[in-house]
Structures are given as structure tokens and as C-alpha cells.
Image (tube, rainbow over all chains, first blue to last red):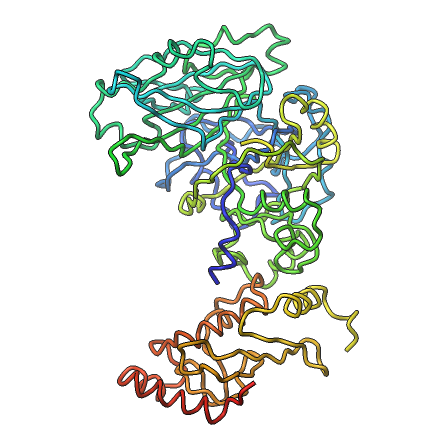
Length: 434
Length: 140
């Protein structure tokens, strides 16, 4: 029935990501996965990150190719099986001392997770561009130039750079190579919530620099994107705690340069289209984050936001938060690859014995992802947002290799304290940001 | 059967069916077995079943002239068969059956004769269905 499914709207507040690591087949690898070298990214590989991170309201899993790929020959630079086997998937384990953003407490992994039930680890996302705030508007008096504006949150001082017709090079630290228009100098921000780009103070001048110069490109060029090339790319970069201790700072960054392990960033990829009235409009189609040398693609989890909102409202009979099967336990398990969070982990285990179809969409279940929910204090009133439908079903068909859940009930200003209990409780709540 | 032996889901579904009934549908658990429901679906307006309540437990007990229901009252509905999902509830299943009464699907028939009738002369078939409704479905 369609009516049931309509409840599960995509929500920007919650996302998963697949990690760019190719997973060597390990004991915990969910059954049914193709050999990882078939789907793995063609050109880059990073050793698995065993750490546990806490983030501010987004879920992350692993990077995977945005389009179905031909089975590619294994990239020469792909990892040889190292002498010491990498940590098994999932990456839940004791936090490393060097885990970013001071997330010292690791979610306690459950003993012996079932083979098909993947646990989550958490990542703290230091910067987040709110996808639905991204806009382009013609510069006053210069109809050939589109000014870029958006709102974002940053829990650390950050640098904002914009790129036009840029190509991402995953093999080179997700470096961004612009085609014709040289990127304008980065705009530096102190940490804060709801930050506006361009900044209010230096508005006019900065706005005039961060534009899409339509005269440089064919219109057809601007209206198309390819796998790694997008008409508009925005990168928010911060220096990790570890990086600061090592003496790195934002001034070292070159716009779009190869990203270093001491940088944590979020990159938003957007496409342009024309509205019915002929005006240009922009739409964010992909977001990636860079954490400790690993690139993750953000993805939505359908049903997570409603679930958390219902939990916060403390309404025990709200079905939005309850497992669709038993109607008793809270939802904590997401079906992959379709990303419907609709079950408790007990029913999910039971379901696996009877069917391999998602209860919501009836697509094949490849694996289950157990997300531990953090029932934190009520967040500050959220900004209303109109959520774009991100029904990227085709993209969801690719294997999601790892996923990481995250939370920060307070937002950057309070996240230092608020995130700690979250981590200690092995928790993941979403919806505060985005 | 004692209520405390029932799965919580059945109790919850029952409570909600009673407290927030679906328009045009009444559903009450059978006294002998709380897993069985006695259901009355009012024939949807502008369907040939209008005015006639139809009883059934995912099987029509009332005789009904419908291409997707056979002589025994069995229903041909995908969500009861291969498209079943545990996310479906009694409420949603009943809504689907109500919708099937509004929109018969003679292209995927259970009763070939009724379906042929429906496809060759829909007006006449609807008239027959109306007669059956008047004859078999007792007013509430």
C-alpha cells in the first residue's frame, strides 16, 4: 500500500554514508555482498578506520560509486592483502586516542553481532551545509553572473570555497579541479550555527567573487553534470583537533587542493537547472565528508528523523517511532540498501528468517544496520525546512559498506558537553542540524 | 483466548481499530478467537456495492459479484499474496479491500466468468453486482 510508504519521506537530517574503503572479505562482511573489488572505488583506497566518532546529527556510511559501475579491473594501487588483516567490518571498536573531535567514549559494541546485522559507529561532522538553503541568484546589474548563497553550521572555525564546473579527483585526496573559473579565495568563518554565506559583513565584495560566471560556459555545459564533474561545488573545511595540535591552520589550505588527513571537510555537489520562468536554480545532489583521510558520501535514512522526533516528543503510542512489525519496540534498524529505518533489531532478525524483502518497499534486503538511538534532551526548535525528495533509488542499489551514526543534540555551541553523554551511551541521534 | 497471550501488536491494532475506526469499515475481534476479526465494509459510494455491508475475514462471507472475488469469497489481492509485507496492518488491508470494491480489476481476475462479464459489458455487470448487493448484503 502506498499510503504506508508515504510516511517515510527522506529526511535531510539523517544520512548514511558508505566509506571509501574497500572491504576485504572479512568474517563480519554481510552475506550477499559482491566481491568488494567489483564495486569498490576505482582509484583510491584508505585503510579501514577503526575509530569511533561522534557527529552532529548526520549518519555516515561508506563511499560508493554514484553510478553503476562496470566490473573494473582491480586498481593497481588497491590494497594488497596486508600482513596484518585489517580490522573486521563493522568498524566498531575501542576509540583510538587520536579520534577526531575528542570523542573519547566509544559505543560499546554488542558482543558478537549477527552476521547480517551491522552495528554503527559515529562520526562527528564539524561542518554542515544545509542543502535546502543553497541558492543562486543573478548578481544585481550583472545578469551573466549567478551569486551563490547558503546557510551552514560549523562547530570549528572553517574555510568556505566555491568552485564552478569542478572535477573531483578521488585519487588525489578528493582534490577539486576547476575548469575555467579559478576559485575565489576562501572565506574564513568562526564557529557558529546558521552561518550565512556570503558573510553579512563583507557581503557585496565576497558575493561578487563567489559567482558562477555564465559567460565562460556554454549553457548546456552548466546544465549537465558527469560522474565527477559538477557545475557547482562548495567545500567547507576545518582543521581537526589533532591537526591543530600539530600546528596546522586554515591558512595553509589552498582552494580545492588535495585534502590532508588533518583536514575535516564537507563538500556539496550541486547541479543547475532552469525553472519554468527561465531563472536558474540550483540543487544539491551529493554531499561528501572527509575525515582522517577517508571520503564518505552522505545518504539519507528514511524514517530516522520522524523516529527521533517522536521519541523526543515522548509519545509512547506514536507509531512513527515504533517498529512496523511488533508495534512495541522502537525502530533502530535500517534496511540496506534501501535505507528504510522501520524495524527493531529483534523483528529484523526474525524477518531475515522469513523473507529477504524490505517491509516498506519490498526491495531485496542486503544487510541490516543497527543504529543506536540517543534520546537526548529536546533540541532547540528546529528550523522549518521543506525537504526535497531525494528518492535516489538507483543509487541506493549499490552496496553500502559501512555506516556510521552520529549525534549532537546541542549543536556546536553545546556539543562539547552534549555529545559526550551521547557517545558514552553509545548513542546516535539525528535531526539537530541540516 | 486470554488477552495477555496475544502479541502486543494485535492488541494495539485492535485498540486502534476500535478507537479510530476507518470510515466505512467496522472491525471487531471475534469473541472465540481474538486473532479473528468480524469486519463490515460498507459498499463504497458509487460502487455497485453501495448500501450493502460486506462481512468477511479476508474472505467475503457475503456473496458478492466481483471479478476479483470467487464464489467462496476468497479475494485476489496482491498484498494478501506475494506483495504481503509485515508493515501492513489490519487497517491497511481493509482499506485495500475497500478500494478493490471501488475499483474492480477484471484484468487480473479470480472469477473468469464475472471478469468476462465485466470486460464485455461493464454496465450490465455492475447491475448484476447491484442486484447481488440488494439480495445478499443486509443493510446495517
